[in-house]
Length: 216
Image (tube, rainbow, N blue to C red; front, side, top):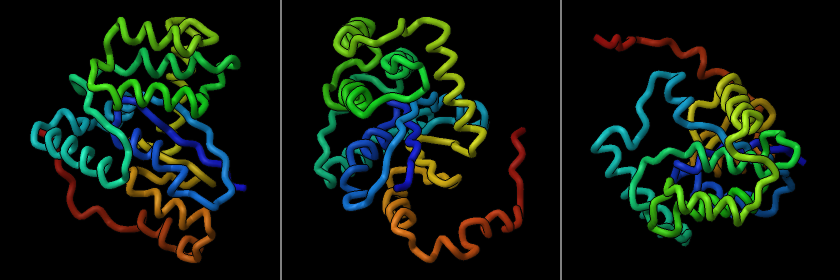
């Protein structure tokens, strides 16, 4: 049985779709999943990038594509009243629901938070709604305590150290599969496809960088 670490941030609609699609995408395969909340904004800062919603034309396209993907996959979705929003309270809530503060969140907790964001059409970052959600999930720890904050920070730092640069990301056997559209590739790997035994995976790092764009 293969073990998958699934890095999620509830701010990402692609992470939501991948979360909902994962059981179908990996149907018939024996595997286990460790859900790890991470701060996507921390990854963007580390790599010096803007998020998709911070580039105006890309923002519109992202929402348009996400709505179509949800429709094509038969996944319920309703855009939150505003996006992006501050996901930290929701990420900390997910971490705080684990009594051992191991950085993991179970599937029920992730599902509840994802649907809080992506299935209501309301303000995902609303203080009142977050308080109601916290009462519903009844976390084992105060979401504002230092231990919870540090656990989320460690999750994010460890993900970056492994080469994770965005969400959703799936780590298995030291390999990172990124994005909703990587699910078929992940399935192929878990099924032992011979392609992964050749030099294709590691060989891409040998491709030279022909030009570097320098910011002025």
